[in-house]
Image 1 (tube, rainbow, N blue to C red):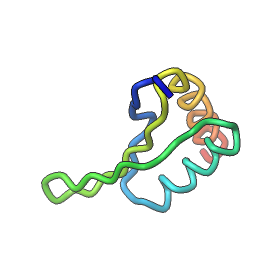
Image 2: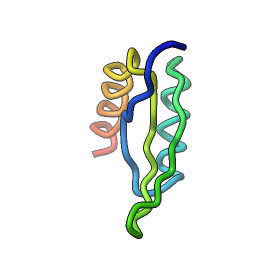
Image 3: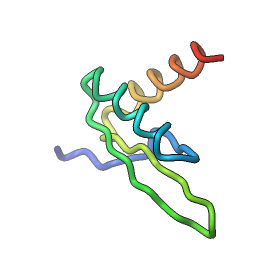
Length: 68
């Protein structure tokens, strides 16, 4: 994979990020989490290849709209 990795979403907890990653992978998008602990606030970044970013953000947005 020659694409650089970019952040598609940021979550306050690892379980939510894991659900997001599973969904993206089910749609054929390679995704993983990068857990960052910055100044006492623990954030989990879901990262994807730059070429998959638009599709990943679209899937994440459609999922969050369904849960609203």
